Image (cartoon, rainbow, N blue to C red; front, side, top):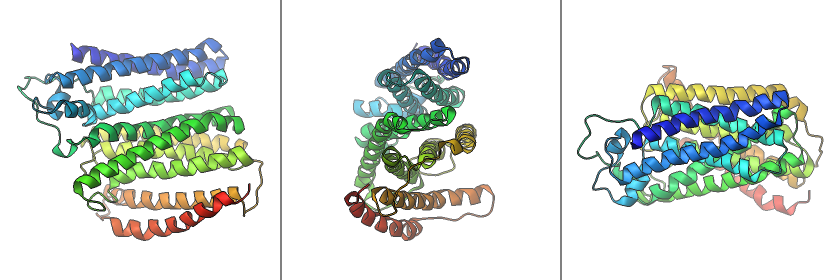
Length: 413
């Protein structure tokens, strides 16, 4: 019963996400307010369906329903209740459902809390979020359904990975995913600005609270994950500069730069195109992190899957979302040039320097993390990039950044 209802809820959610994507975009083209307003109702329905599926999977774990392949693989009857609850997102399929729950939650928040936005803006933002949700739901139903049945039903499950049997599993992934997925709202606002050819101080007033909230959640998620991992295995040990840790650190660096550049746009009406690009890059890096964790290209206790089919699907989704958004940026960004001017020695000048160091640091982490994977994919040999590379490139970029942090707030606009 749980499997049938859960599977149906996910299938219906895919249809609702498709409506959330197509209806407002068609309404925008036809100037039909009713179709634009349909995005609000679709966002509510999408969250309800994903929440229903998530609750059903949680019940299956708490009841030790080993007829579900995912439950049988990641739990057993001797597992304490708190770890059975956390095991809901302790594996690939459940963590993907948690990812989708967060996306539906952010979409619902936009539909409910952004009533003061112009209808065409809110409708476009929700359409973009619906399109992302449809892509991940299709991925889940095709390759990663947590409600798949197993036959014959085992008498007991295998167990949750012992390294994951820690209170950190209860709080770390939800916080991290709230930040990861929360940047999808800034991404959707950036694409909306490009579609409508509008980016002014009002746009920043709409966007900054969502970006700030996502940054706070991601910061807490990384901090909790660091405490958990290093408490278990020692500070600065095996986990330090782990590729999958870098996958969550890169969007944090980009998101930090985004927060600062957004302030410059709001105060001085400068760096408009740069801010839009940072919003696109930040969420794109979140998707790249999802690809690294679930594609099987990395071997780490952080990773969830080793199925090449899943990796190929996510890579295709990544290409559509990131490639499409960058193409839209290339076409429409020239119309968003800022008119504000500022002196090099000023608070906004310090924020520009801040952005330069943050993006340079981001580039070093990005290259150090992905360069070995690219070489391996091209059959050009295998290399290992470890802590010495990151320490020699990242630390020198952070030292002047710390100096600018101390001086910048003292300067006038």
